[in-house]
Image 1 (cartoon, rainbow, N blue to C red):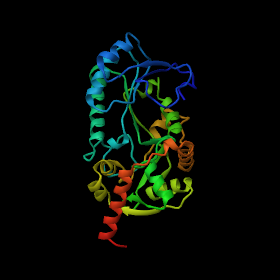
Image 2: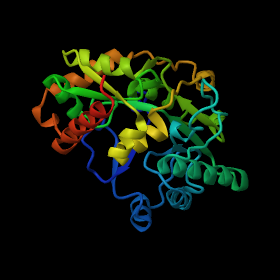
Image 3: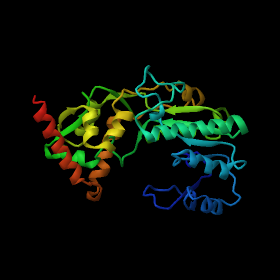
Image 4: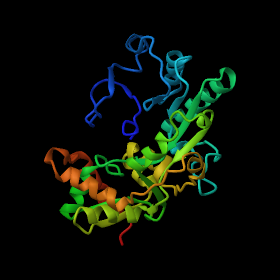
Length: 311
């Protein structure tokens, strides 16, 4: 969207992205997390805006401060809505909701990154902006653990695990909707020193999310509801994403970004996004990756759960 609006873009990455790059984008190849290499590749370039999508720990912020002090008028850090108080004591979430997540190291690291940037802004005037996306998706990624493995189970008539009772509310934001709000912050002097969340205004339960995807897959799925703690006991990686994020209802008030970016509106409903996901995966069998170990684990989890708590 930035290129469509005539922005002169420079993309700095390792050259391994599979997503298409718009024509006219200046490409720099390197590892931004390698300070010496990054400095060599960037040279004396300066930028109106710098956006770091891959800063996850405070030391990454320190590297960026060294690289871009005096070389940008706005530095945008991509944080995460999972940094907000978990579980939340009040909904909807606003930018003033406390940042605290004792369940997920990823989120605590994002909070530490924000703290370092706030100190740089207050102490030296470093022109930072913080953006906290929630669950933002495109056609290549399903919104649940297991990815296409879950779709294969749906189409094979196997049971699908949903955490909790499936009634907690979740917010899924199409990447094009996110981009509309995000691009409006770039080069906007009123955004400097501020934090923004950019999410959809559509709230869905996890039962609805799975039902919508099953419909897009052309099936009626069978669901097994399982406590998030139990899922975590079987699979700690899956559990971290649940206990630290997805098991809690998360809905957002986007008044702040709408005030600064009047044309921001989340217009793409999730049912359309689900159809895009299925069309993309169905178009190429190489994208239909099934994790056999996870598939077997899900079978075992369901068997243990239903044996202990028969319906």
